[in-house]
Length: 383
Figure 1 (cartoon, rainbow, N blue to C red):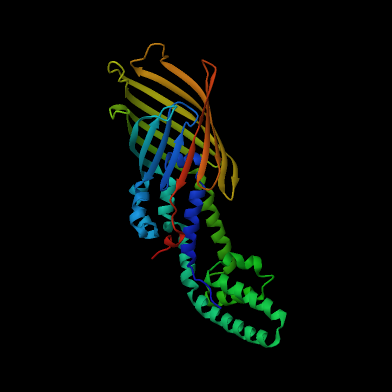
Figure 2: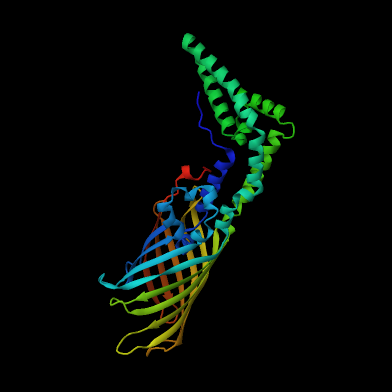
């Protein structure tokens, strides 16, 4: 009988990192990627683009296999919060119009902070304490189960008794849960597996200061508290991006900021962009405009704790601060909505619909976003 041994607290680190990633909406991941992101914007409109974004952490992960281990991961705060942005721009006929490039940095990234500091939580500390306390039972009592298991196998070989097969399976389950310290399963299965009562008795005999059932209740409570707050964490980014035309001349400089605040299934979304541009038509006309939007993103449907379908409703206010062009309004308001569908785990298809309140016009934009670059689960454990 052999069972793969994984320390309980390291398994919990993996689960927490996965749960944190699952808690992020498609809207969230478009603001700041984990590793790499490839996207297309405005496929049905005149100003199309192909975008590639990568965090510094993602780039480092290509060259450094150990970067996803817990110890190194916790030291990579700056790398995980810094994203490089590149974009190729095209016209309606897919003729090259220019290039955009810049950086995004997360001033506040509470989910990332929680992952990096997970080992400082009460949940992790209790798991670590329990792991130390239960070392004897892991190696001592499992050996007892192994001997019983081997005796049953020998007898089964001689007699073919089917009841022995059931007992062997029960021992395998008990030993697996014991070694992997999945003690929250013991209470549920104790009625159908006689070996769990022996585990509980043996554990409490060896660890007088801990009641196993009380421990299970405490761990489940701490785990629920940690995981239930994931979707409520804030993200605030600032970005600086430059755009050239097809001849390589500087055309536009954009300073932007995005603030997201989770409200369970709802997500407050506030954005602002200050844009300095040069028309470069006949003569240079330097313009300055401000674009703001605010709204709510709603995770309408979830599957396996992951958002699958989202709707974002928001208002846009745009203002020309300098050098308003002829026939151009200084201020404009738009009512907008984004419909975002998750096709696979990593591919999102966002559809944006804008309504010009003053002109009563509808505009539609179809985008595709692909998040890629996997963190190997085997690398998430301490080495």
